Length: 283
Image (cartoon, rainbow, N blue to C red; front, side, top):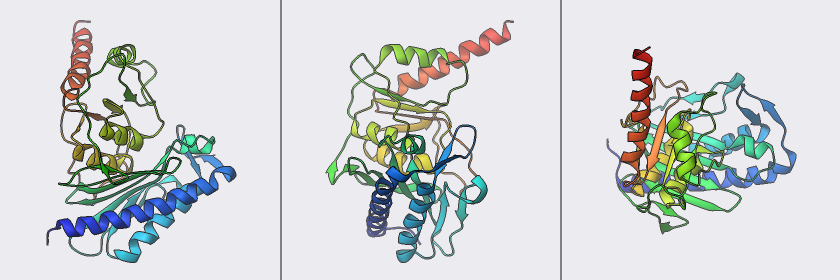
């Protein structure tokens, strides 16, 4: 049984409602945040689990047989429930993407909800509660922001354009990252989902992520690609499809950009990697 556009549209409507409910709850909780350390580089708050529960409950009302992969499980692990029927639909959920911002009272975070079929995201919703901005897309249709079409544009990296950069590089920044910082008005929103959403909108000409997980990128990938962006790993390979049955929180290296910028971005990354390999071999 394959999914039709009607099925995707109905899942999109469910995701929109779930994301909005969770985002509204997150905003209500901002003044009462209690954060604890989840790992060396991650915080978690009581609102993360609450918002995740809101999203899952709303989806289960309509799709009780669907599966879930979400950020907040027990003892710092992911939450995972396999689908109970065919076609096997999984929902990838990040209830608060940008928890560090949220925990420090910075209202720059997003709710990310995606539905995946055949290991690929087919429905994506990213809700930015502070501005009530709703980014949406279904595979094969246009990307939208609050019901209006969005497109990546064709601007290139330069002194008046912005590139989204992750904050999880190693101790030494690769030369190509330093080059991007010099050449652009680089940005770090503190949320992978919004980096991808604003690539889709054309606010960022590109975004590079070092360690995002499935729930960080699933919705953003379908939205960005629907808006005309190219999204790959740092080697230029497609990220999806992936085996969701075996997925246990592995990270990805993601390069997202408009079609004019993406080839040069990969060239810079791969060229730098080749230069470092050559230096190592010549030692």
